[in-house]
Image 1 (cartoon, each protein chain N blue to C red):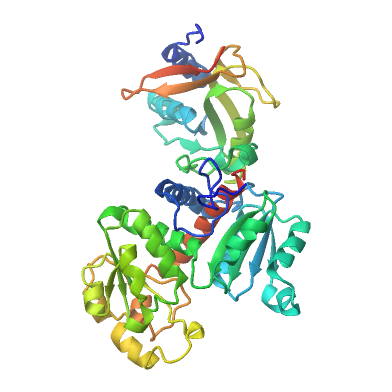
Image 2 (cartoon, chains in turn yellow, blue):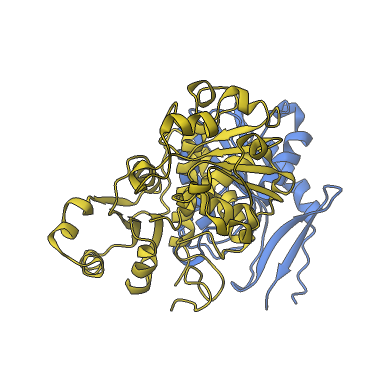
Length: 320
Length: 170
């Protein structure tokens, strides 16, 4: 049975689904990050595969397009020896009128053990978790504007890898925050892990007003927002989610909020620059910064596989 | 509580003699996390004439356990670290307690993920019986019989001295 308090945890407080970072205790997050460290070294072995999910079927259900996230989930599941089935749902059942829960019922009849779900509607992975068989585990791979918990966790892994201790950091999240499920997951994770200074930086139209309540300082001035920061998380400008004129132009956005070497000089000398990808060069980040010495964008991708291996192996090992 | 007492330091002396007998040129030590890793570390220092101080490997059963479905993912602190090439090596595998043999099976699988060793030899401090797999050590400093419910494990004090702890009903 799903616990009434948090649908992601069983009665022993162990993770059985990963739907959102919000509400997860610090020790659950730390356990995932520690476990990811173990899996990172699997990439250095002659045999880059461990048998933890051998005989299990992982269904990648991407109701919304994604290349990187789907690929890294697929690699992670395969390195755990699972059988991976990719369903391009956007082009099949849903377009023929099948409801989400009917799709899930059909796939469950194919003996799925885990669903990795991306959906444009916030809350879709919760709905699936509440209606699938008790032995089935659900991982949210991004739902609407709500959450992208594995991206949040891989961001935390990256920050811990380069900065070691969360409790003295200043972290600036810059750009299109209003449309960003990554920003929301990052903020919940940073707060839970004890980061004292979190800043949300962007124009008024792209930074939601309710962030102060989450312990976040809102800055509409880029220089003020990144001054003295240890970590700068740049977000992609999500043109596909924008309706109406939220921005004068991409060029104007770059001038004010695009990360250039000049602006980066305001941050700490050893600051790291992160981005969930795909990057828009010359829109939110200058090429010189994206490819520069402070950028940890590619390590983020590598860590993402280890973090997804950790999440899948932890939830698969916990009884409902 | 059991009245059984095991002098871990005396058994370690026995194990050291046993390892001296088993040793062959080109051998590499591999300790099973955590008790076996402590043994490998101390044997490397105590048998300097044989090991020349070559760093021992540490191997974990976590990723190959057969009770993963029941126990889930253990904490990530016991990662395998092998500072030498496994390919063609004669591996001396060390563990504190040999019981069902399932941990040994798991670490042998783990070992083969790093390459193809020339041979694997097992030496343990205590063989407590109760085997569920066809695994036998080349050397055991002691053979005892314990009820299955009792948990026997090696402890290491801050000064490096070993003791045994026995938990559970006799």
